[in-house]
Image (cartoon, rainbow, N blue to C red):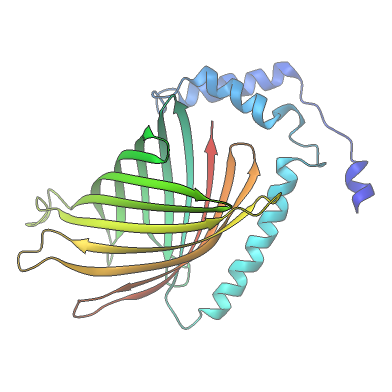
Length: 284
């Protein structure tokens, strides 16, 4: 198998053809990505990820993604068998980031499925800006618009958040904490309570381990939701426990896979969910 991979010929795409593809891409998406310098994006993608040799199987990003896709297929099949009697959910997302000095601007799109991955539950788009205050300390603001599945229609929600996070390195461990104030409006123009947001303080702690000379970093995390604008009292009503891995596919490309156990508390009919997440991120 190794000989077969090594002897596989490299296919070169003519420069003129690649330029035509890039120019077509820029024209189509220029209006939707005004915040990024698209010429820089085109050059950086070509330089970092070596598009002219994308189809060379030897040590290429495409070859790595092919192996990862096989692993994901096996994991999802295994998970679906284990959770056949539960309401297993699948979260998928794609994230693109661009650094501007101390500020990082990112855009994310995601699809979420419920009923053992069989029904689309939510789709969303998110934009955020992260600012590095000092080493390890960051502040972030973000906005998300989402369409959430109801009985036979989708309701639209708008979410705003302000984060403060801090991360420290302890030898090969990374310990991070994040506190978020989140305000979410649902059905603003079609509901009596649409003008009243749900306001939460979300606090999260994450511990990851950097394996020496290995692209995989395992991690565990815990998060709780503290409701702030309940008329009776403030209380915690949701807990999340997570475990997974972060895989460095290539420079600036990361794949994250994790399992999350989410359960509601202090509610009359609390839900308990099994969530499996796959996300791919690009730092341009």
